[in-house]
Image (cartoon, rainbow, N blue to C red):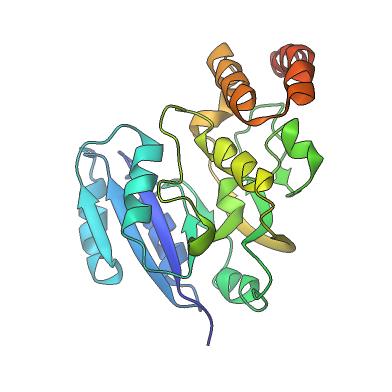
Length: 239
C-alpha cells in the first residue's frame, strides 16, 4: 500500500490557473489529500475552490503573511506520510507522477525530480530544472520545491522561516542538507511551473535574502566565498 501524499496549495487570486492545478492533483492515481490555503482571494478563486470542494480535505480562507506563511498553515493540517507543495499556477505533469515516485521510498527522506519551467521565462531561467543534492547547494538552489516530496517526519514543525519572503524554501533545503537527510534523485518529470513565482525576478532583494540565508546556515569558508559569488550571480542575471 502506497503512502498518503498531502498536496498543499497556497492560493491568492489565481482564478486563471487554479482549476487546472486542482485537476492535476485530483486525477492522480495515488492516494492524495488536498489542502488549500487561500489568502483572501477576490478574483473568483473561491468559486473554483467551491466547485471542487468535495475533493478537498481542508480548505482555509483568511489573510496571511505571504505564500510561505500559507504553506506553513497547510503543513500544520497535513495528515499525509509525504508532503508536496504545489503553486496555484503550476500543475503536476501527468496523473501517475506520485504513483511512480512512491514506488520505492523506504530509504528516502526526500524524493526529488524534474520540473519544467513553462514560457514565458526569464532568459536566464533554464527550461528544465534537474535536481542535485550535493555541495552545489551551497552555491545555488539546486532543488525546485515543486519537484520535491518531503517525508513529513523529517520536516521541522514550522518548515518555512517567514522572515524570508522569497527564498524560504532554499533555507529549508540548506537546513535539511546540513542535517544529512537522504534524498532519492528521480528522473521523473514531476511538475510544469508557471512564470509568476516570487523567486523568478532577479532584483537586489533576492540576493540580499540569499546572503542572509547563507550567512546563517553556511560554514565560514563558504560564507567568505559568497562575498564574491553573489555579486557575480546578480550581474549574470541582469544581462
